[in-house]
Length: 349
Length: 223
Image (cartoon, rainbow over all chains, first blue to last red; front, top):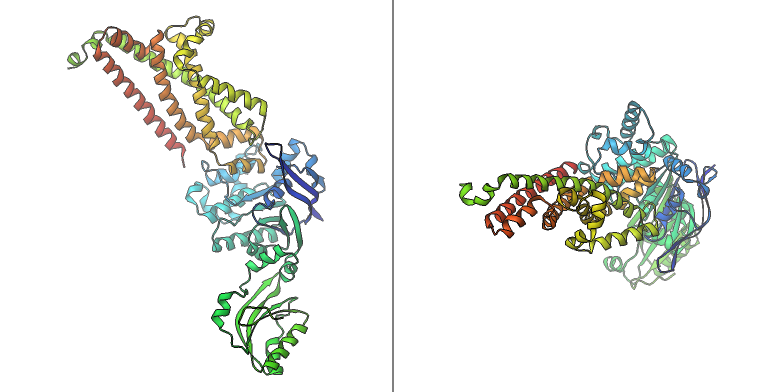
């Protein structure tokens, strides 16, 4: 069942001098309960506004936002506050309250719930345990590292047993190693507690390592959406291809061509495997069948949603006819994308 | 030795002591009342601004203009202009009783701006977080705005009280009592220079105490 539904959502901000700015255009999204949904785009694409429409901080100018079947933009104030308590949010800058201890930071969302202090204590300690920071309850945020701060923010988001956690660039201020550990924690919360995650980011790495499905946002519009594997394997729009390329080591640059110094008889070939064909021994096949030598100079094969995806950059050398026959063979392969370069960096076929 | 250095002060020691107490009384009473009013007005300004948590153009504009208006009137002119109102409120326009009202009116616009600046310097992400975790507007004011800026508010309050001490000396000119009055009466009108010096020293000590106390409090509030 879909937990969050956005139907034809438009958002326009009225600026002071009678102008207005359209931030979201006709957004249609459906996020299923229990999935990890990514929203990727450059800054200014409308990602944060989209997230703020989900928890009702922004009201769409047109369209419907549904949460659990209820229409959020028809909610009155008390209902909105109740909704926000069911939706956890974590931010790029962590947004911990510097004057409060870690314990009080995590307890802040339930501070006004008139709960018995013992109940509060057990909830806070359970949340801190979940993020692995049980020993930091009495510290202040200033004493913590970035990764620890984000863990505290996650504990704060968990305190109300949310159905969803909205992650607004949650790892963008962290170093790669810390990013990895936070992503692991988020994934673990999703798998163990069934918490739906909406992950807004500009980093394709995050989508690759965390998300099940992804929507690509450009200028307030969704240009492409689908499961992460097919987005990586067959990106349709130019922007999506750009994002996918940021995660790939397989780009043929001038400096690469200079470094390999192709002879006239040699060809540099970029092979991209799609549909999990990486296991097939194509390289061995062409070298045997066409009497060509293939030397692999770059390879990048990754595991996305338990399927292999990636490619190789190889240099083919041999008799001129054999090389072009081998290329022809590769081109005929439906599950391999082939790009051929000569020493002048031209794409030949 | 004090006899030699400050003969005229020693001669009027009782009056000097009374005027010091009067200054302290004026600062404490008008400072406390002004603090409460200023805090409320500053909160209203910050909350109703266009990017605030309860934007309201009309209220913000009115309040903003009024604060600016009062800030632009020199204090000595303000005291005179307020005399009818002061008499109506306090029953008198002179003495300590007659100075509290003009002091409050004089210092509050400055105090409001100081606290407003402190509140506005708060990281907007913290306010956004308050909204996102489902706090009401009043809870955001109480547990985020006020709590997280308490050190900054302590700092600007110190600055304001130092200014207020200056204002209490000015009300002395129009018969307000306190150290200012003492300095005018003895130091200026009777040309007793040692009195002026003694008044400066006492005010210097007073300001230092306030400054040190304020710094300590704001340091206590920072983590």
